[in-house]
Amino acid sequence: MGRATVRFYAELNDLVLPERRFRDSEVEFAGSPAVKDVIESLGVPHGEIELVLLNGRSAAFGDRLRDGDRVAVYPAFEAFDIGELASVRAAPLRKPRFVLDGHLGRLAAYLRMLGFDVLWQRQPSDAELARTSADERRILLTRDLGLLKRTQVTHGLFVRATEPEEQLREMVERLHLERLAQPFTRCLRCNAALESVELAAVESELPPRVRERVREVRRCPGCGKLYWAGTHHDRMSAFIARVLGRFLPSGGR
Ligand SMILES: [Zn+2]
Image 1 (spheres, rainbow, N blue to C red):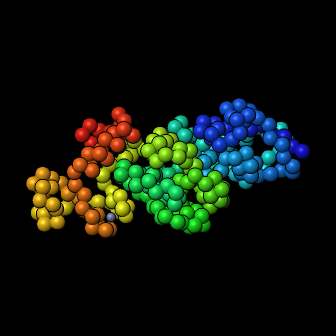
Image 2: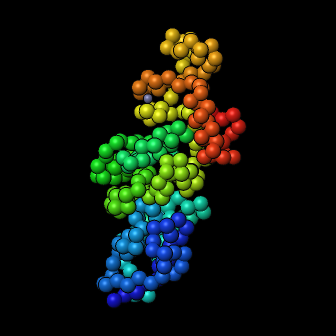
Image 3: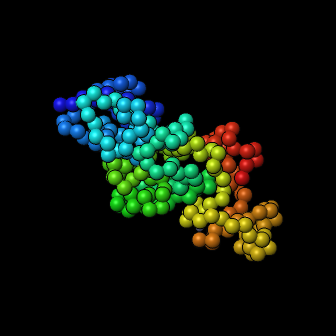
């Protein structure tokens, strides 16, 4: 039997047993297993990981553990800049796009409300989700740890929160989305980027009271739905302000 010391950093500690949280802990193994397999056996899917240090040097997931090794595991999308140290994955995704698991429909709509490109289907297969994430370089969000352990998934996050508004807040915080949000620029129904239209061109499609009041209307090129600042919009603005807090420019849209 070999033994190594393992330490997990930041939010990766949510995923491991309490006795392994925020401290060095020992792991026993037979032979010389891959770093990825040992880490995943402790509960952390590789898609959550940005950097593994093996005896102080950046390691690849396929590197083999030997007796006496020290392993430090850092989460993906950490706030600090690990720059050129990271070698377990290709360059991080700078402008996040997402594919969401079927059980995260509300979160998908909320992320679109903030302007993010989000693919979502009610009943996707695991294989489909993994493939879309890899092929289109989208961050896979799910509450299914098994899905994140698929080798294909290089950018995946396990969503800790269970309530949709909390889930959105969690994602904003972990991925620093407040700086990238562009509220009300994307269709909530079909994910297409909204286009500005001349008021005169759509006047006949607007309810009379709206026609008198609005100055700006946007249309979804995908499904044709019109968007304008109405009462629903005000409710959503309040919601977004709650989630983004001080980061949202005042009067924001
Ligand atoms: Zn649409």
